[in-house]
Image (cartoon, rainbow, N blue to C red; front, side, top):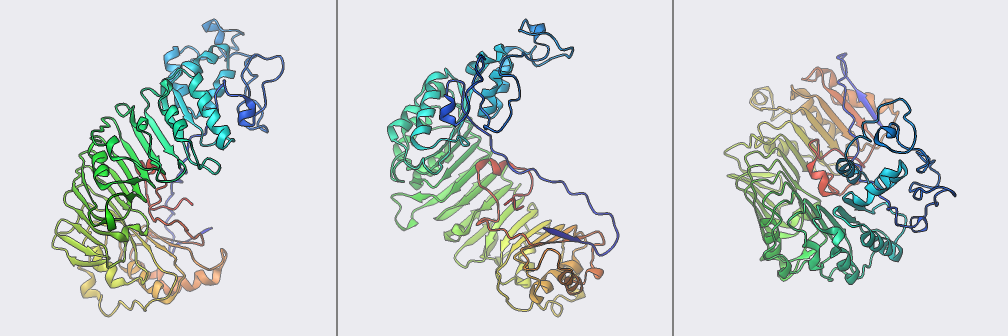
Length: 524
């Protein structure tokens, strides 16, 4: 629950509610039996396909007994109900494209609309995403094989996520799927598989459609050097490698072979042949890369030339084990974080050097960066202010702190009025996570309340108070000195919701990297 508190009477700014990221619903096709998907058969006496929805869901149509409205204009069975059915007037090629863009189950269920639609499903590009199928293990493997054998293709999407019961795929079976003619000219490939163990190699057939792939997600296997040495993905825009074993040389080769990649996700990668990671370094040279999320162990990450890069998102504490992240050229970088307070990790932007959260050198400010996320357990005000001076146009600041109490943050003596006027505080949004309302935390927040003249929202998350604790709110009102706030229109929100995500940047899938809104907003 969230409680909003305003110190004056300006109208509250209407906030847009963000719809959660929704993965495609999936099911089966006409050729799969109802028993395979735990679904009922078509009613007796009908010629339509089995109903593909849940058993408790009423059918949306009459299983093929009634045509689409306006179907008479196309020579279909039935009478025109008086409305104009523009959809039925579209040519088959366009209707096939529409079907292929629907979730798998929804696309299959279009067959119940009219006799014309029954043949469109098999001729439309296959969108095979069985992430929501109700069968597992051997039954799911059999279903996948049956669909690929009976659908002539081509395929738009082949997505087989790993779920309980599917932990051990037979390598020969996976290879047969990938070689199916139905997957010729594939565009979207997601293989979340664990074939017996991580040491099992990814079949070479996985990338046989590399010339047409737009999205690739690989999880839970080993990628051999031989299959990527000369590999090229001329159309690939989103690439995710998660929980895979690969050599540093092969990883660099794959990235170099993606000339138009826009979103890159590298997480929990194990490097083979590179003992103690001393020889592992990753270099990024990409004119097209926009979002880069990474959480892996390696010696050095170098962003040599990325003119389009806007989001640089270290994920989870794994970033502690990257000795050095160096950004040589990324002139349009806008979002950075989360930066951890670790003495073992160095972050360099040109001539600006940051060790953990300590600024070692900052002769030129990074004016392009608008959003920054950090983890500062001790909530050290002086440390944060020094860090902010490296980002003179910073608008959004997210701070994850420890549940423990550290220091007092008595800032008034050092940051007196004569010094404050030289601080260029442009912050519009401040989010404090694990905020408990103790004096040191309140003193930290008060500095920005009294000096951030452009502040719009300050959010306090993860408090231990009750949802309707009026006494706590009243005490915070006094401690934070809200009546003296520098921004008269600022809103102050208190939330008891605690974010349990490992990553402050909430990136669970490569598609999350393409979101244009706030990557640090918790959706859990």
